[in-house]
Image 1 (cartoon, chains in turn blue, red):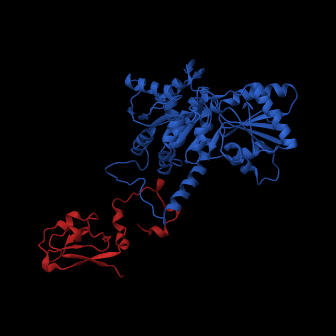
Image 2 (cartoon, rainbow over the protein chains, first blue to last red):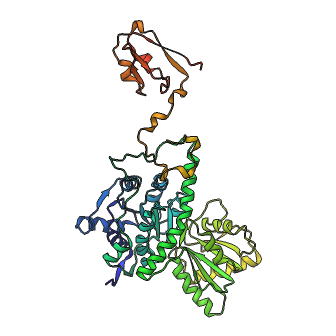
Image 3 (cartoon, rainbow over the protein chains, first blue to last red):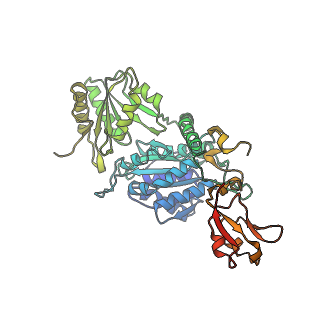
Length: 391
Length: 97
């Protein structure tokens, strides 16, 4: 019987990877992700997880080792954060292009300099276009659940893609939460052993990541794009089946008290929980305010998103990353682009907040919402506003 | 391969554009990279096979008379064979095809 226990989220992720029967973990420790791989190293050393743990000299090597492992058909896991994710950058494209279902949790962290180990989404946004499926979790339970889902989605023969599960550094990675870890038998049933269809084997040699002259490269890239877009159906189906099996349901776009909301706030990750308490308060005051949370970042859930925001007058997007010299936060830029062609759409207001681990308090969200409404009505001379920076 | 590379659509590719036919690089005509070709004077040849050993393309083979000659389907015209030949059998000439 699955029981609820108080556990650090990073440790719970390690336990989830164990329950998922990972064959290989290749990782390099980096704050705030360290406890995940530290716990996995312990599990392997103690003989609790029958996996190869490959200590590597860098994140570039970690992801490279993951490619080899996944290519051989092994269930492969790694984790990283911030600078580590950036050091992996070029290899991330190779994982998705070679269609290798590696699963990676990313404890989202700000980028240097100045050096910050604390959380924001700068690291994720820099790897947005690497072709990975990307899921943003709001709390520890959601990270754990999505580790199972990530393996099943990635390994689905219709998908065969690597999956990142994002959790906010410290705000999620280091908190102790009540977590339900499912029974081994239930996980085994949900996530049976997988056989990669073209795995490396001496009896049936294949070439992966081969040379593609201009005559074939665009075909290869388009096939990859079509496949990533089509993965959304499998993602939805997997979440549905996970819900049936474990009682917790997930969807690409989450709406909270958005019925008849004139103003919608859009967040990603753990700050959505703070935002919900603010929405509760404002609803209590009779204000028609709701929350939209993007759980699925890649492939972008176009239909679900348009459907979720179509009746609102104002959409206030809170980004936790800067697109230097650009039109606003990266999420907001995308949202504006997604809505541009719609006949009926909300006014989109862009805020950047919570950089480098700076908290956004409930009062802060309230200020953002009020200022957002003001901008929607009266306009702003700026493409976006930064929240909470001392002037 | 049923279709040539230029006829393959994105739907025809294996997952991840993986190549499932081992050794199909042999179908790749590297000979059309060539700007110079080796010209032989076999009367000087001592059949030492140094040209074959040094050829980075591995495309030099013995012909029917036991002399070493490059397969022009693959020869890129690098001239290493000409440089290494101890008896100066090989002379690189401009490719005019």
